[in-house]
Image 1 (cartoon, rainbow, N blue to C red):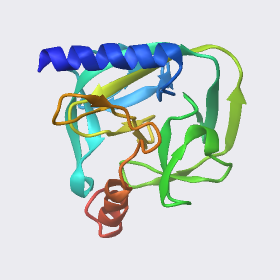
Image 2: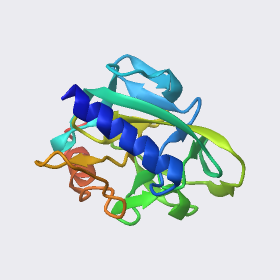
Image 3: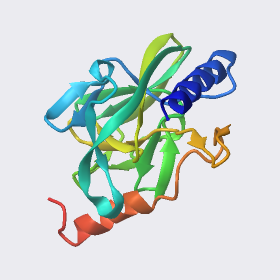
Image 4: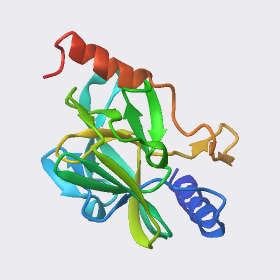
Amino acid sequence: MKTRKSLHFLLLNALLWVGLLQPDGFAERTLVRYEHGLKPIEQFVVGNHVVVVAHGGQLQPYSIAQTMSYVADQFIKIQIKDICVCAAPDQKFYSCTRNDWVSASALQVSEQLLCGSGNIVAVDAVETVHKQQRMHMFSLETNHIFCVTPYEILAHNIEPVLTTTGVVVFPVFVACPPAGIALAVGQAIGLGVLA
């Protein structure tokens, strides 16, 4: 299994290097929720646990399988209330406005984003910044929806998939599963399940 993970990591890095895969990720100092509060994304290492939205909308800790950083040529600066989030253009957020996952580059002012706590926050400003920026991303063992910023905004990362034949397939165009988990969070909150 460890050999597969190593192969997976090397192939992912090769695809990123030649520009065939547009990664997700966040700039340094982006706060990610973990089991003891919030921590900057660049401080996470393999084996740390982040709080994710599991099936049924439950918030649970899941282990990080691998971490990676890279330098992006541009990033999206998103202003939400008093927080500025700098994300890769393809980083996905759950939009209640569209009831779907939306790339950071497609976000619009007033877009309503779902938070793990059940709250909804509105995007105040969106700007594409054409400047190099170090981005950090991680892969989770099971679930791929995690919370960023003190508002616990739901974010999703693109995950390579191992098939039964051991061949690595990268779902570049279908990066996110159906929005069922995010919708379950909204439904659970509507029923008063999550506080």
